[in-house]
Image: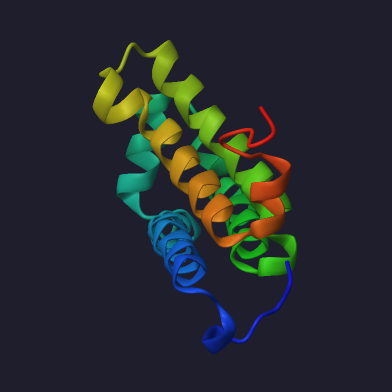
Length: 140
């Protein structure tokens, strides 16, 4: 990503940049909260793990994996790698809820929503990613 002075950005570029950081910020705040709960090994986390059929002993391991993925995603130079790792975590959450036949929109698809915010935020704030994954093909 090219570093530009905020004053040198065109208005549309600034709006996209900040939209991206707001979307990313929502994911970062939610995942930071989730990670802290897992690392603190709170009883409610153990209960949720049991409900999902996950060994309680893995709560801190999952929290550590989330922390590393989140840190990579929050740092602009490694944001894509972090987004890939977070997407894997979200996929695991979707699978855990699918196998229990949990409600679709509130539980099962929540990981999909987080994934959309993760990649949407990154897409808005990264011109390089927009070039790699354009939403429209201007050449057609």
